[in-house]
Length: 236
Image (cartoon, rainbow, N blue to C red):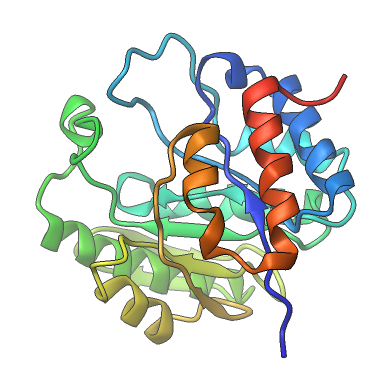
């Protein structure tokens, strides 16, 4: 039976927008025995945000100090990003992390902080779904290392190749009440293999305690470590 894996998921806001803070958290997470240290790809939230970091540059900095755990954005609203940029960024970060990058993708939404409407992005969920599926298909082709020729509703590739083998694991994320992301993750398997992910928000260190009973007993000490890191900051 496969061992249950666990990861930290800090937001890149305000005090955690400092890339050096993210580096220290990733190093602490690896030392504490976590399996991943992912970062949130968000621009805003309900409460005012004064600083925000980039979800690709921050894990790139962390990748220089970790040797075992997996980095990556968690989760990227792929419809608001150009597939060519994601292809280059993911290929570069995967090499920097020695093949340990995990890319989690989703539709994105306006539900929590109006992020899409505040930045002029597509608001229709069905259209974003088509954009997401098309981007995943293009990324799978790009990560194969073969030249990509694609003309679709939302993006075009004309004989472009990125050498990236065996590719990047892609997780499809969604709220637990929505089964479509799970079906999408099973249907789309870019590069190595797709994974299934139910995205749930547990805000702040106290949120981790409320959801502690949902994880296996052997992983609960790691949850306590995460609460300490998020509450008190990484060890000096």
